[in-house]
Image (cartoon, rainbow, N blue to C red; front, side):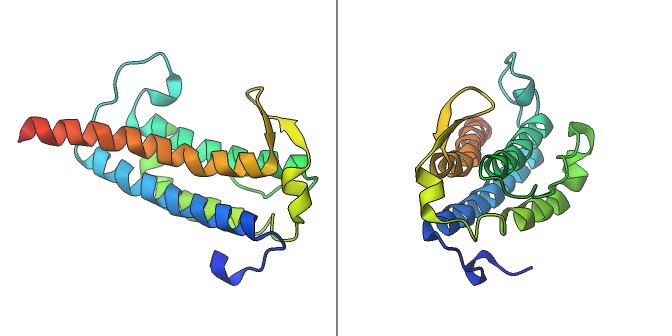
Length: 163
């Protein structure tokens, strides 16, 4: 598939956010791999998505899928046909291939959408917050950044503890 830089978008803001999403999903995954290699343990919580490194990875990837599916629904675009994220017990083995699939499917849906559609209307997200499409794209970029930041903090604590 073509890289994002080869795809022409009617709204360059969408192109930039799709490219940033790709960058930060990959960066999160690299940090996740480091955390996995170090056997980092996540703090205890009632949040099922934060029970383990595997559930966290699945959460980030499943959310990424959910953002673009939601965006396509709200813009009346075809379903981007992204497979569901692998279950936690298989995600470590399947993550690299799934991320490639996910990011490939993210590249195309928004390229023909006019700028006006990204900012004129707002819609209720699956968690009840109102977002215009542009804001949901920004949310999709920030989500892996936030979780990578959490992992980086835990890695630093671990590395400081072992000297």
